[in-house]
Length: 387
Image 1 (tube, rainbow, N blue to C red):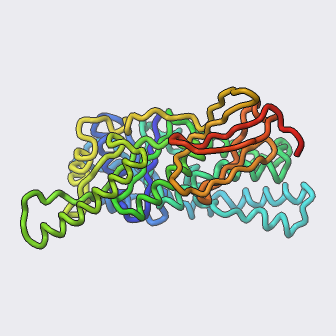
Image 2: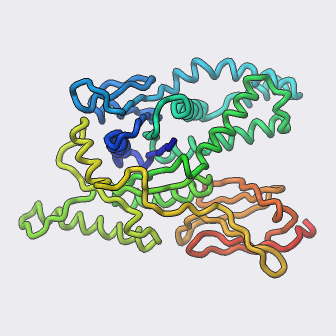
Image 3: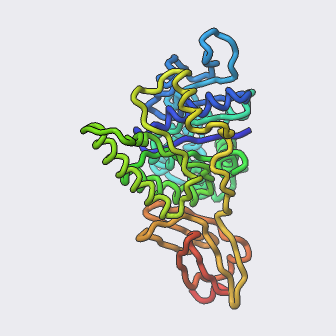
């Protein structure tokens, strides 16, 4: 099973590219499901077909014959109406039984992001219970996706904190939620199963957000296997006239942005380029042409072929250890490190994650940190010493 998550800043074309990728995978004989978790569903529009919350086979040939491609749009509000109210009631009971007064218990069970969490859980259910070889997920815009991908870890930690990690005393449904969150986290952070395709357009504002997204995903331990630059203006060649001059100027601006990406360490082979089209690519035929431009003869699952670097690597040095944290950093990034018991709290440009330190490093104390082309390098002394 492989899961591809497509995300990007709103309006960059991620839905269209997710649909084209799913179509290309099905065309290679893989049973493929493409599912949207974006609250503003437009996956059905891309195929020119009506879609519901349950997977339905897409008639890509126009004759009703099986093509190996299914599609669905997750209705997270309906999921919340069906399943969250009962769970919230039981969680409220557990918290009240743990010694919290009723008002505090009521406040703690109002959890932001439940809709998104349930949508992600529905993707996992479909992926693990269906006949598909590959699941392509059209996620929401970048900010929503980052919140979505952070939820399993955050909520699992929440459950542990409010009840001291003693899930065996919790109600059955709450215990099931904890196990479900752990399974989601494992699914998302297994690079052999789940990878992200980040879609962007060659504009400085979009690229800046994409680079911050790369950092945030690295902090979460979620692998990115490809960047797709969409809507690249065609080169005007030897054309003349005002329209050709406009194209030439716009393409030069876009090429400059691509140059900045490559200067930041992203190699040309890690970028897939898709030219802007005169017409909107809607329907299987148009999506097929787009998929051919995007992948050609390559396997759509191959990504950019770049090996996944572990988030943490430890090296013994004189007097202690060197901990390398593989996160991409921009020049001028605001980085903060803090020790929280046996965790290292890493905050980069407002994105924060608690990273469990390897057992070897837990008695140590942080003595310094610096950055290089591969990320952060944290030095630790051999014992934690006085606080």
